[in-house]
Image (cartoon, rainbow, N blue to C red; front, side, top):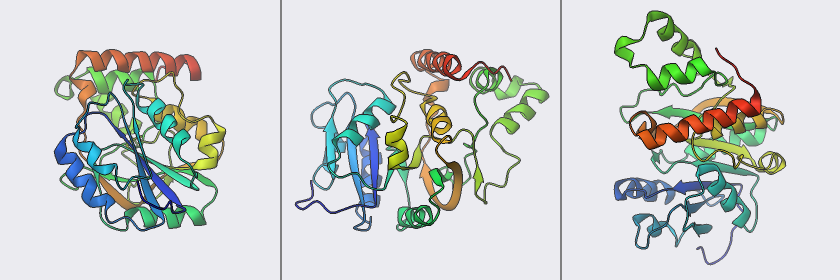
Length: 265
């Protein structure tokens, strides 16, 4: 922990689950270059003594260990609850991200001048520097089924077109635009709006908590794709491969549709 607590404009909240050392190395380098007005905090799910992520504890504004694994959203909620002095903005981040110096200061300055925006996600790039099409329409049964269960090599043309519509591939990802469903890998949120809606819905363990919170925050203001800065996302797509994660994914979909209504396509 820093010896003296500095008033932050933005605090990046990192949700860790057995983060490998190679990701910790990248994070440590990026976090070391944050300006003084931007801090970071870490919550570790299913903590095991001696994990590499513990290296970040000395410079974190808050470092929280969970012996259990309450899920992504609940862990983020707990971390917000532990912050002694809430900043104007929080960032909810995966640990598989890296970025150039100045990225989050650029995003914060823009948000501070556009108070009607309550949620923004920067441009998300893969390791090769290509855009990841992570802006989406509100979830539909067909959209989720097509993307998770039908391999691309056997997918009919109409579903390929549908998938492109679903991820807004026809939009110019180099320009800001409002989005129904923003990726949870790197969300910048106005703190008062986050608190007002009660944070993440605890009914989501993993997956679709980002769709849900985007929809809830949209009642408070604009939710936008903001490509004035970018982050690199080492996206594993684990939910496509492991049966346990597929079951969790289906449970999240069930909870989402019962909450917001069933949309088939």
